[in-house]
Length: 184
View 1 (cartoon, rainbow, N blue to C red):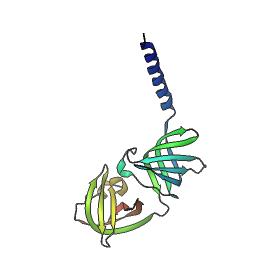
View 2 (view 1 turned 180 degrees about the horizontal axis):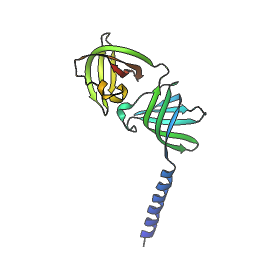
View 3 (view 1 turned 90 degrees about the vertical axis):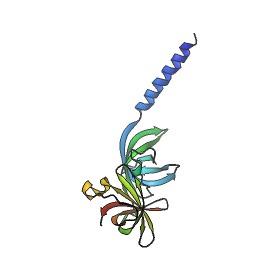
View 4 (view 1 turned 120 degrees about the horizontal axis):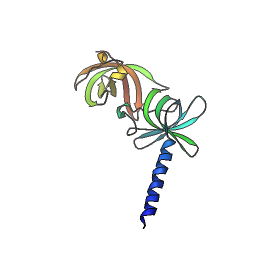
């Protein structure tokens, strides 16, 4: 007759999981990044919204709905993220599933020209490693959403010469460009 305590503990576990899941909701958070804590597969951004509320956003490649759209935020950037909001003690947390917008404080637009070194396919496009005529390496994120339409999208091959225009940013030590226009 030791089955009764086992059934009772399983029932308690089910009720506890239902209650804990009900406190999680999906939300969009927008604000300025005031701190960054590096992690194994990403980082935690401290995001302060316009009302002074603070959220700790866990932004990691495995948690994103599209890992190809991972972006590294820096202190001072403005970010809009979507995901599950929950509390840990009195701190508001958000497990980020999507980075809707990242306005970098030092975001610069530029044109680069170079040769495609490699291509890594993604969900909505690909990332091309470009060696510029000056010898710099850029990882160019080329996707239909970033270009605005399928008419502007083009697949590049290794060894091809390219000229691209977009926002320049850093991910770690790597130079990145979110391509907005393919110029040739």
